Length: 172
Image (cartoon, rainbow, N blue to C red; front, side, top):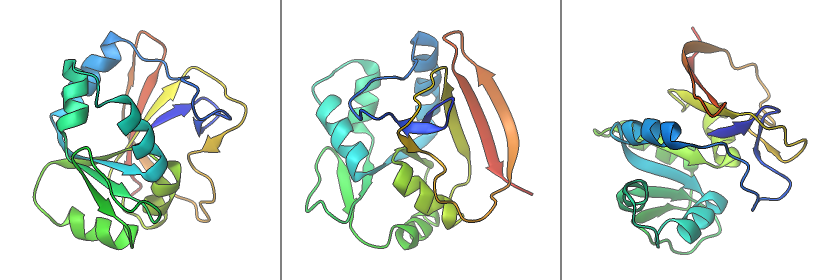
């Protein structure tokens, strides 16, 4: 999940591209993709991604386009782009999916969906890409979390472009 220094996953303008991303980060992502077999999106993130990735054809785009996707939405009637729609109980469906064999699943974007998974204890690993930008307002990653959620630091990586990847697991 891309996050600003002040904790936002979206700016006031959802179309603003505020992420800091370079070739080193792209190489990290390509390595990371080898551990993943499913991308997870909420409706808004899915709509943004499907508007951007399908016409592109570089190595990164091929992974984005070819990897199966789950789209959690109560409002969409159909999905495309190698996706399956999950219209109902997000937490229940995620519990079921986590029991199936396969590689990791990754929630790329969707603070509301992340909040549901956080509240239900469904996140096995937090990979937060902290960007060197202050947005001042927007959609916070950890809004409306009623209980303290303790995490255990696993590792950190700093990229030359100024981003920091912070990796946490569930607390002890």
